[in-house]
Length: 543
Image 1 (tube, helix red, strand yellow):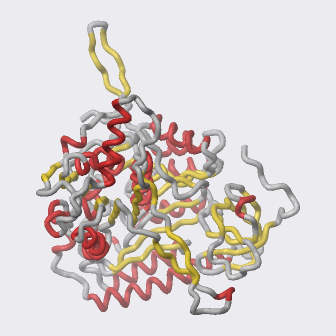
Image 2 (cartoon, rainbow, N blue to C red):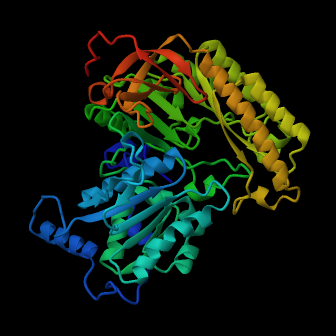
Image 3 (cartoon, rainbow, N blue to C red):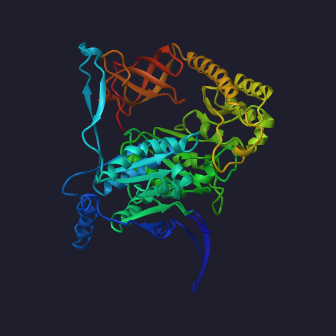
């Protein structure tokens, strides 16, 4: 049961020693189930390009050649990511492994739609130059019909394989963990099915596919080892960093504990090392990720506190901003709020799902907190950091929810006035207790309640952002504004400490990664726009 980060006492001939566990080595290939294919070659009878790559890599190892392994023709991949930030971070890690093998992303080219003769109004459509050699679907099972969505995505790739094309198909993520063997039965063209806990071991599992000619199923519970390859980050300014995997809670509607496993915190030293490397690479903002981030360290020996981690990471030289998601009202301590207030780099933004404003429904959900506990947290944030943003998640139409219960939810929203709420109608998920509850709410009722709560959410989001009209805010510039309607003016996109999206004129090549002051001249429901107030000043230089 020893885990990375634990401190244990070990006895030797010289006495007793305190030893900190840095990592736990796991042979994932032995844990995975393999099934020999009847035919290990492609339909045309030739050795696959992926196998050529592996063979060349082995030859380089035998010759002590340390150059990057590449096939005679560039092998390409496509990563399709569904779902939450955890999945996005997992995809970045899988892409890093593929690129370390010499497999490159299949880029899309833009083509103008010639049907429109007006140059400024020409629509651009993306078209792939060719089909990828490796396809990875990183799946999410949080919503209803998630499995059908995956099946529809698989169809065209499976057809290519049936036609004898050289393609390796991987299904990863939560649907892979949930469906497991059934995926291989429904789509025998799939080469690898792997749960989220194997995201940083994709290359090991692919070796069994390529060299052994096997179908591989990797969904057994395992310790998550530290990465040996760098993720392929989708941004050069902001980065995701996992700090805790899994969840030990058993909310009656949620499939996450089934698909992502039990909680496993990463050692503080590993997190610090990763963030330091990101800072050295020029990253300005880091978001700490966890399905239940407030539980960080409670599975360690000795236990750690998430509030201490905020202070540790937030004090690293060169880091401009620190964010974290997702908090759970049951475990969130007031110490976390204090740590954010006392750490200059910590962003004033809290994402705390409440799911329902009714105590009766919260109890049926197994949330482990009530309405009053949630409001205590909100009041502490408002008192300590008045300008902080608070966002949340909510479910309407949970089994047994009455109109009175729903009114309690609306009342809670009116009491808090959230900056934004992710809303969803309840959908039964496999292997969850609530899916079998007898008092399911009818679909038309759920739809009507969702419409009402969405309207209130939009009203509150607009009110919260309207407060900033005419004020000057600090914005971390992230990317070019791709939604700009003015083709003659360059525009950039960034965020405030509260996480509000801000657009303003500027050159992205000059401003990317810079903190700039922007005077807000327009407020929309989910974004702000304005002008720089320091146009005549030099852009902040990287430290």
